[in-house]
Image (cartoon, rainbow, N blue to C red; front, side, top):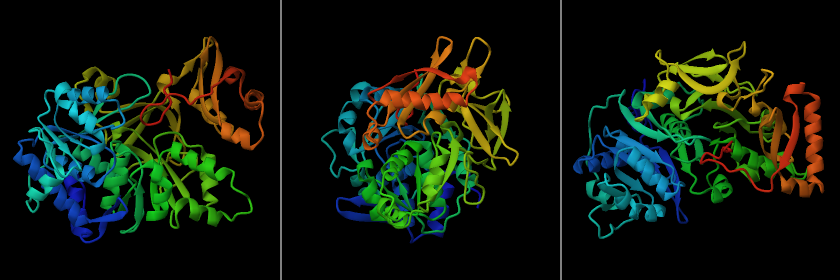
Length: 506
C-alpha cells in the first residue's frame, strides 16, 4: 500500500506483522521484546495522553537517547496530529533551552539521564506546560512533571483516531551544520512516508537490525526505524556506543546503518589483525555471526573501505541525503550498486545540476525552515528545487557522485576552483592520516593533519612529520600545480566537530 503518513506505516506494519517482534532492547541484564501490535497500542496510548492534556496540535519536544519509550512517544505525537521536535540530547542545556523556545514547544518528553536539563526548563522556557519523564515510575512532587510509565498504565487500552493531513508539518528537526546557526527543518508526514516508500531495501520480514545512530537524526528515524518497521524487521536498540561490540554479538544483526566515522573506527581495529587468522573468524568475533550489510550515509566514505569489508563478507552500501530531504536522496542497494558512487536517486527524487550544484525536487523535499523565510528562499527556489549546496555529477549509468561543498570551494586569484574535500579524501586514504582539513593560505593550499598515533607506534614511525611530508610529496606528484599542497601543520589533538561528528571547518 502507498504510505502518505507515518500512521499509515504503523497501521500497516501492525496488521501485517502483528505478533512478530518489532523491537528488542536491554533492561539491565534482561532483553525486552515488543511486538508490532505493542508499538501501535503503546503509541496510541501516548496520543490519548496528549489528547487528555490538551496538547494535540502543539509542538512537543523529545530529548534523549534511542529507546523504546522515545520511539513510541514520537509515534504518539505525530499520529495525534501534533508536531514532534527531536532534539540532540548531547547539546549543552543552554542550547536545548534555546531550541525549545525557538521551536515554540509546549511540552517535553525527556530521558531520565536529562534530569538536570528538565529541572531548568520552567525557568528558561516559559511556554512549556508539561514535562514527561520517559522512564521514571513515580512523578516528582511537581504539577508540571509527569511519569510516562505511570500515565501509560493509567491510559492503557484506550484507542485514538484522528484524520492526519499528510501535507502538514509533523516533525521539526534542527540541523547541526559545520558553520552558522542551526535551522529548523519542517517535514510533513508525506515527506517522511514517501521517503520510506521510495528507499529500496531488500530484506525479509524478521530480519534483525541493530539501531546505533542517534535517534534525533533523520537518517536514523527514517531509514533505521520507519523503513525497518515497514519491512517487518526486528530492530534491536543499541543502548550505548560503549556496548556496541557487545550488542553486535548479543543481537547478531544482519543489517546495520552506520556513518563513515564508525566504519573507519572498525577498519582501524581490523587493519592490524594478524594475517594468519582467517577473516571469517575475525568477522564473527567483530560483528557477530550474521552481519551481511552495512548502509552508510552522512559523510564521504573512502571506496577502498568497501573493498576491505567485502573481504570479511560484508557489503557496504553508500547513500546520500540531508535532513531537508527526509533525508535520503540517493542510495546504492542490493540491486543497483556502484562503488565510489552515492547510488541512484530515489524514484521520488528529480535531480538537476546548476553550476555543478546538486538540486533536488520531489515529495521528500522539506516544507521550509521554521520561521526563517530568508534561509528558506535561499535553499528552495520558486519552482520547488532544493539547492543542496553539494557539488557533484551523474554518470552515464545514472549514479550520483559528490565532489565537495559549494560553500567550501577555494577560488584562487588565477580563477582556478578547488574542492578541499577532493584533496582531503585523497590524503585521508593513507593510514597515517586520521583527520585532515585543507584550506587556502594566501594563494597556496595548506593541509592540517591529525595523525593516527596508534598506527605510527605499531609501525615504528618515529618521525611523523617526515612521513607526512612524504605522503604530501607523493600526493603532489599526481596533481596539477594549482592543486598541490605547499605546506602542512600537524595537530596533536582531534579537530573540533559538530554533533554529527563532522569537522567544523572554520
